[in-house]
Image (cartoon, rainbow, N blue to C red; front, side, top):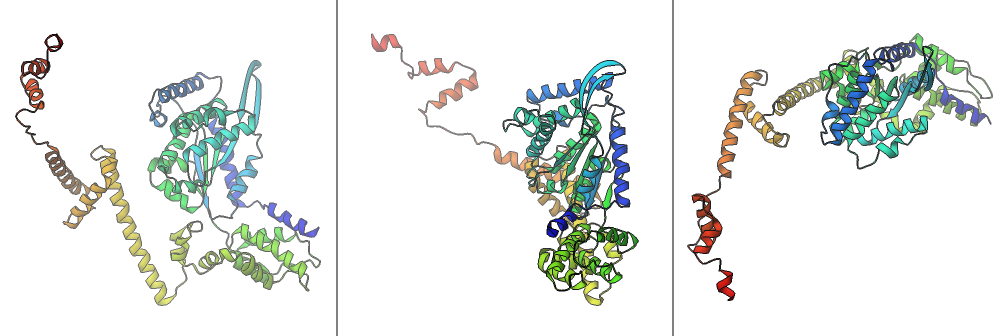
Length: 490
């Protein structure tokens, strides 16, 4: 029975400073988002009318209508992102805070007047593992179906509907039910999407700007790359401040967390918390609360089976080596501040700049590592500038998306010829000249040479009729190719 009691630790949550930060932002976000969405106000009716217009445009074949924004609609909605190492309790935190609010409110009157409407205060969905836009929309429809017992998944989530159409229906439902906040977890999965991740992020920004629905995005550090590619998305993702959920430091807050957790012991000999055990637990978990809870929980199981019947440092080590062997390389990387290994595991690479500043000196090896990082940083910066330049030419319509590789080759040739990517104005002028030369060469190669036919070839009469604007039928009749049916058969 005690084994079952120990499993209760899986539900252990100790509110810390960061939990209160998230709560303040969440409560403010929900309330501010409703300021411009009074369901009886004319402004809200205009918003619904706008969505109906877009739905009609989508049905008429305008698949880009979903991304257009109306400048006449006021929005007080905001958004923020939470990024941090896996196992820090981001999702659990937001779920516990959301449970403080009723998920559904059925209104029957407003200011002593009959007014019937259903309000969904919050909704939470996970980004699909493959980053599929359509699947994410279907999960949204299913979440509403689960809450209200509706059939929107069957109605709007059919495969024959495009992703753009599903997004419009998602916007419509978000506005219809006055959703207070949409929480999207595991946002880093968008980096694996076959589609353009920016399409989803643009849509989420449209939800905030136009429909007025606040959006919270939660993910691992790799999600930061999604927000940094576009100023508009980065601004909206952190419009009330982005939260970076760092792993805990071995300080007073860590001691407070472990002391609270330590009270939940079900072993025969209750073990008092010593400074040695406190430091040992930090050493094996590196301040990741999810790992710390697992190590403490499994150590109690080991203690029940041991002769000592109490928790020891040796048990922490055994649990780490036997039960958590798959995360040992990551823990070692965090313990030694090995930047190259930390970058390799994007789920734990939260703040590389801080790690570089606080890295442990290690003579020649560390020096080489830093030189390598600086070199990689410069290469990455140059690559980003190249991608930005290519994006400029595509956005201005100078080059089609399908000719992106050809454009990249031209840019690289220009850089080899001595042009600097820093002097973009001069570089762009030269690239445009090269594009014009390429286009003229392509046009020449596509010119069709005049084809010559044999003297009696029937196609000669077609060419002559077209050139002299004559009837092709008459020419063919005059030259005996078309017989007179009366003479032919009578």
